[in-house]
Image 1 (cartoon, rainbow, N blue to C red):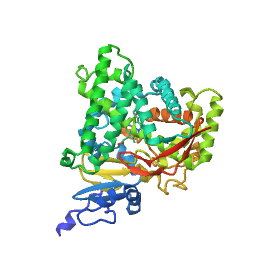
Image 2 (image 1 turned 90 degrees about the horizontal axis):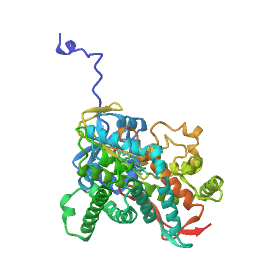
Image 3 (image 1 turned 135 degrees about the vertical axis):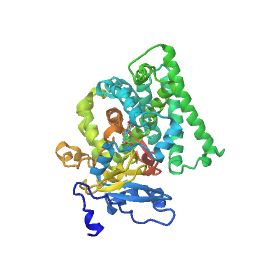
Image 4 (image 1 turned 30 degrees about the vertical axis):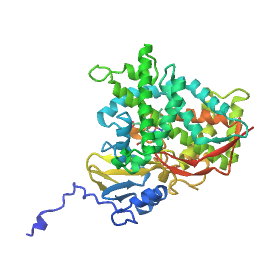
Length: 456
Ligand code: HEM
């Protein structure tokens, strides 16, 4: 008998998973890196034509891209992957080891500790801050003024998240300083993620010094907030209060560094995403005046002559559909990475251990296989009977699984309140110098969004 005939295939052993195909357009040395850096949105959206899972060469490294919603859902829910990759590593070095960058048991403990602060009844406590900041934004503008929408929405988002989660007397004034520092930090972060060449950023250039100063300011401001709250003796039920009274498994209080890192994580995670989503929504409404009119009519029909409040949000159905549709066609959170902790299988393909995996919400949410008239801004696609036809995991602007955004309800509430406060007072008209092309950064935002505030 030949040796081949004695080694019969075991019917219970699944066939070894195959290697996924390489995406097309690979160049010697660079691989796909040039395309990914040069035109990330076009490149990532084109990957679906090469397969549900494809291999990418990024210089010397191989990464895997997942292009099918079901498989992305599986990736996010599987214990076989954790947050990792250049984005997370850079964030951790610069911002610390908070809930957004930790993994495993540490991460589970941190989520359990924070989750109660994001329950709907706790978010309702922040309603008055959201209302006040939304009104302050609308009050700042003058008739005919050209509004720098990115700056305005960023300031509003930082003020809301800081005042809601860090209740100290000086937070009103500190929030503006946090906003200024964080704006500079975000500008420098993306460059450090895509080009993680340490020595480049140690050079004493003006941009590097500005970045370092802003990062140091951000950390100092958070320490000042913690010290102020401790010295006030107030415990409080806001997130800062929760962190100051939380204990580790041993029963010891959290270390100051851990409290600090969580607060930085939350301010970072809760600001630019919100600001960019708001900016895109304003921009899309300038392109679709009929939708702007519907939002204003809906708000007026709910509030009559009084100012809109947190309690009105349930009734603002179309306004929320406008936000969800803006998040679909212009997602602020556009690219995500994971790292495999062991060898896994995904969609019948082998994913080696310790490999970077990427998926793009931008590409998935604009996939014609999942959405009819996929590039059209159509908020009514989120009416219940039509929304039910959207394939599972094809639309998840807040992600799913263990890393799902804890700030999802918080964000929807603040964004809806800002829109519902601003739009009945101001029509925002595009001006010639405005450039709403996507600007690639940690979040996707309009490049330079300038709108003229015209009183209604
Ligand atoms: C429109 C606004 C927002 C969007 C689109 C958004 C989106 C997301 C997404 C997609 C993730 C998951 C990241 C991943 O899977 O790798 C995430 C995580 C996170 N978000 Fe948000 N977010 C928003 C606002 C907020 C706000 C307002 C807060 C806090 C107040 C917040 C706090 C966080 C935190 C702490 C994480 C990390 C969670 C973890 O790793 O366990 N986000 N966000």
